[in-house]
Amino acid sequence: MSRGNALRLALLALIWGSGFLWIKLALDGFTPVQLVLFRLLLGVAVLAPIALLRRMPFPTRRGIWAHLVVAALFANAIPYTLVGFGEQTVGSNVAGVLNATTPLWTVLVAVLAGTDRAVSLRRGMGIALGFAGTVLIFTPWESAGDIASWGGLACLAAAASYGVSFVYMGRYLTGRGIPPMVLAACQLAAGAVLLTLALPFGGLTAPTWGVVPVGSLLLLGTVGTGLAYVLNYRLIDDLGSTVASTTTYLLPVVALFLGALALHEPVTLPTLTGTALVLTATSLIQNHPKHPVDHEVNDTVEAENPR
Image (tube, rainbow, N blue to C red; front, side, top):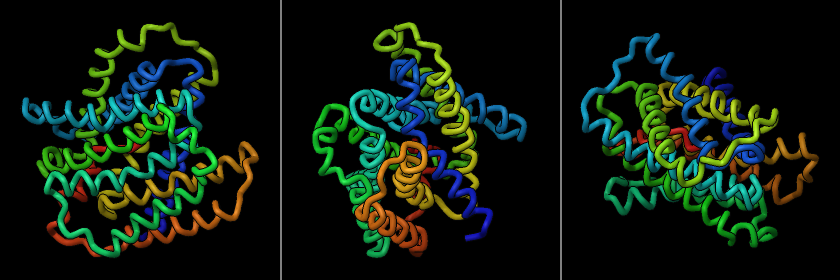
């Protein structure tokens, strides 16, 4: 990996890893539905102008737009909203560890859908090791009440929804000659329409326009959604789509050290051990040999930011 891509990966992990904190803070002023709607609109406001300035072609076929709506439902509308509802009752660290199950759900859905092809032993070990490291980082047995709550279940369901979206997009959207950034902008726009329709069911409460929730929402939308997509696509172009799973496992590592620096949370031996396991898993997943038959599943992240 080049130094430039290593820096992009680190920046992307920092952006996504801090996303759960921004969600927690933004919920002080917005309902989960409002939060997701504004986040999607801000993401479109970042990505669409870039795509237009680069004169990238936008899809015109109804079939593609229908698939974009389904992708937006499972990749944005459902999981973003579920995480928002979940973080009303659970900590951002619990949301982070449950989000790290996304690659496991993706593999399971791919197997059930018949699109999984020869997951290598090395990659399988990396996935298992990465999740084990994530569990050690957050020692969920000390917060079992959170994970077993409705909020914890909502965050787990969000991760499962991401898994469905990865496989769906790999089958119906990627590899059709549409630039990934255009797919992302269109998908976020479709998600914004879905959330607009959902406003009567959870978004009519007047927001609290405080500095902290508004600032957190702006960061989440422009940086955590818009800029993150740009970085993600550059990494996909340079390194392949397995980087998505890599960044998923780096998120709790970022959350761990942000908590220690900003909130003075203790760094224990289990968390340090978990961090080492996560970094080892990153190497295993990223360096596994890619076979031509793996492309459909691997390319599913080209239209998705899992956070």
